[in-house]
Length: 411
Image (cartoon, rainbow, N blue to C red; front, side, top):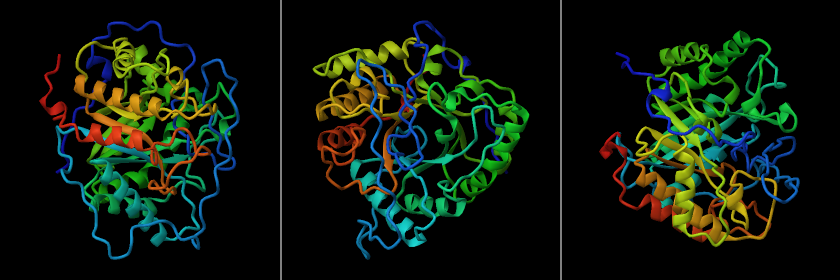
């Protein structure tokens, strides 16, 4: 029998103490720092004194003939030491996967094993696989899989590898923004000319992925992320109802931090995540305590006290000078500063623990990358893999002994 579950609008969960002071134009939350392939724009707003520079194009995905750095054949399989159970913190990473259909199934399997080995080495117990879906212009009424959308069958291959490693799994479709034009157009500003048609199209798109998630016992499925302009639409209930007929796991939604702090996130889901790129006006020399205070100032706009029903679905920052002022800035490339990144990760982890949150997912790993490779000055500043100080901050976080929100007392 399919279990029943309660879906509640999230304003009812927390008392709103302050809803003013939110910036008028959102930072677009760092969803695609590693999506710098040809034709895959990253329309993030840079807030600061520097003029945004265009990002360098990311190298094309390797062909099937290119041998990836993989787990050696016959090596002992990796496995999470303490697999996640309800009540435990979700210590995770977002993996972003733009598929290359020319890559073989064996290539995908070995790449997934490589990522699993890296995650287990960090001490992670969870992983979220974000993958693109597409639309037309900001007023389009259709959503669809594109050439970079992995098929359910290919996603299944990856999910099985992660399950074998004992990782809690989430699937997370993320609207690609390249067809929306430049700022201020982004996934949070779409205005479908016919909302009935848009939601009907979206239900159709989601269906095979939900079926795969059900078949493979995926723990969570994120119905949407950062769709500010559509939040609270009553048609979401139809999407959630249709999802529940196909999938018995946890259904969630990830809100952009600006909307989260501004007021009600009224979505018919069980789990609310926050893509959290809160700008903190502190110098590069700021202490971890100062960064923690900056985060708490933002969170207190919504609710003071413990937040045991919230997971940080995305957190990250560039390893460069001046990044605290705009952690969701993916255009500007300033001087490398690994202390900035490592201290930010340490501060975020402390906030998660002190406010008894469900956990955190770091943004991000690109599925095709080798996370064990060293990062030179030419690499994206957003990379945390290959940066020893940040990797140690993650290991310290995941190994901190935090018992999780299951022991939290709701205020």
